[in-house]
Image (tube, rainbow, N blue to C red; front, side, top):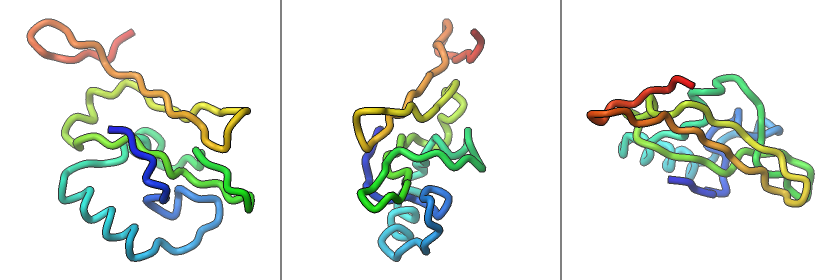
Length: 108
């Protein structure tokens, strides 16, 4: 599931370290209850890359790829792709190949 939630899910997802508001805390709680997570963060736990540049110059990661937590092992790679023509950057996702009998492999 790809979502432009128009909100950073944590303080690490914005260039200015403002506090997370109550609505975002509620959204994170709801996602956790659904066992859904933003899959970019587990692959980049300390990275400060962003998907949106506001008119005020603030950078944020407000676009998210959400997936059930138990299926994160099926993801090979996820990265943010710069865009010169938009205020929004893209997100590239590589999924592991499915082998026979439903098992996944992340080899090349």
